[in-house]
Every structure is written in C-alpha cells, then in structure tokens.
Length: 431
Image (tube, rainbow, N blue to C red):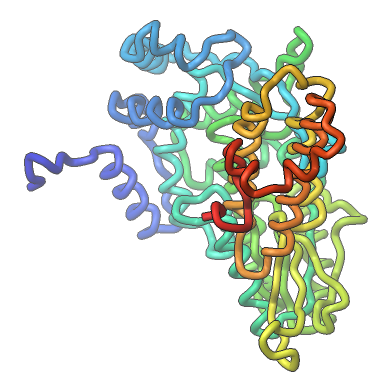
C-alpha cells in the first residue's frame, strides 16, 4: 500500500500494466483502449503535457492561456463527453513553415488546435507503452529515456569497433509521404480497438489549412502533431524488425526517427546493406534520396558523414597520433544554421531601434540551446567560431546603430561582453 505522502500515479500504473502485457506476448492485440484514453486522469495528464509544451494556436486561434481562462476542467469534460458520444471530430491542422538547417529551404509543420493536441497526447499515453515493448534497440528517436546523444555515442562506438564502411541513408520527405493505409495496418497489429483506429484515421485525414483553404491529407503525418512521432516510429519499426530478421549480419543500424545509418565492416556488406535498405523502403512506399544515400569509407580519415547534425570522422588521436579515434563535431549544415539564426536576430537595418542588451537577451537562449546540443569533447574549435561570429554580428549592429568607426575594439573586449550579458560558448561563462 502506498504511503499517504506518496499517492499512486494511476496513469503511470496503467502504462506499466500495458507495457508488461505487451512485453509478455509480442502477438497480443489490445482492445478496450478507447475507454482508457477517455479516463479523467489520462486526459488531465495529457493536458499537463500540452500545457508544458506550450505551442501555438491551431486554426481556431485558441491559445493555451485562453483554454485556461475558459476553464481546463470544462474543456476536458467536453472532450470526454464527445468521446463517449462518439461525436469528436478533429479540425484541420494549421500549416506553418520553419527554416531547415542551413536556412535555404523550409520545413512544413501542422499545428493542431489545443483540444486535438490534448486528445492526441492522451492517446499517446495509452499507446506508447504497447509499442515500446516491441521497438528495437537500434531506434533512438522520440522514445522515453532515449536521445539523439545516445544515437551519436552508438555510432562512435561502432566506428571504434572497426565498422568503417557506412551507409548514409536519406529518406525523401518522410513525414509527408507515410502511407496512411499501411500505417493503420501496422498500428492494427497491436491495436484491435476500432474506436482508437478511427481516431488515428481522423487525425491523418483531418487536412491542412493553408492560405485560408483546407487541403486534404492524402499521405503523411503532420510534423507538429503530438502523436505524429509515435506513428512515425511505428511505421519505421517495420524497417527495424525486418533488418533484424533478414540483414542484421551485414552491420549495425542506428536510427533516430527518419535519420539512419548502417555501419559495416566490409565494403561488400555495405553495398548489400545499401541495396537492402533501398528495396525495403520501397516496399514501405518510401523513397531514398538518390544523391544523399551513399556508401562512405571512413577508415583512412579522408571521408566522413553527417548524422543528427554532427560530422563524423575516424582520425588520429590528439594525444597519440599513431592511434585513430572516432571524432565528431557540428556539421557544416549545423554551423550554417546557427549563423543564419544569429544573423536574423542581429540584422542591423531592421532592428537598429532596439538597445544592444535586448538583442543579446534574444541571442543568448538561441546560442545556449545550440551549444547544449553540440558541446562535447572535440568541438571547442567550432564553439569558438560561433562565439566570434556572434561578436562580429554585434559589432556590425553597434557600428550601424551608433556610427562607431572602432566598434570592433569595444565589442571584442570581454568587459563589454560581460556588461551586456553576452553568453559565450567558450570561456569563463560557458558553463
């Protein structure tokens, strides 16, 4: 019995029960999940997650703050009533675009309304432990207690272990091309509750609002949907499972969502793995980008490859030049991306009316977040390059704003940088 000051987390308890049941039987299909999604405590936990993630409004324009003003209990009660009456209908998602790394192209996001996000979060709370029981060790993306950094470490370990032939795979427009019917069949391997399958189908077919018009969704899962990462993993779990059954002797696959590499010991294995990946993805109605899917040999250090924003090479150790080690640092694309974001904030002519302290206050979380992801042994050179670029952009801003011919001497001084509160990736205040 739980102590009075440690109440039982019933949602967590439900998730554990579902996980253990799924783990005990890989063939079990789950029914009666719809009623669990509609449970008050599950909907409340889902609301907490949506609130903590904040996020923009959907096509109805309703924000998190407006939901709180309307009454959270009231919103959850209405959602529950709609579920019980089978009258729930999602609205189309709102299409927005964000720059891709490098800044030249844009990535489409679909933002559901808050109520739809709550119900998607509730569905994910119930479904995730069922599918987690089957997901393979090679998958790292959008999973509990797994991260991109773990995937990066796994790749480094395989290179250290002598797997120097790498198949670099790029799936063309993955989130936009997922086949709805195949995805629903893959979900139905574990979920037999037709009401839950109908919910998922409704979200997939809800459509997209763009420039005032609703466009139908023929394929894909909207990036921005709460349940989309889970559905994306369910779809590519088929690839993981087939690899394990048919091709695991060729090498080690490491996958983070739709970013994946295969590390092999020989060129022959890598070539076979490349052919297998292309053919199997075609069977899943996906296409590899012909120019970005390739086989790379890293053995002599002359070539490398990019994965999850890092560039990997097999190079001589700094301490012992006769010994090679796997090293990685921010890729050129990642460096270009952070420079583009810094330039956007410091664009002189558009923002000269602002004090430099406001510009710095806006820059700091951008640079700090980038550094939190990319800071690791061997990246000090790239971190220092970004520090210098930030100072150069601030110097240009100050020179234009105040017409200082010698603004560089001022901005390069550590005392001035401390006075405006500038965060640095390297140096004394980088911790």
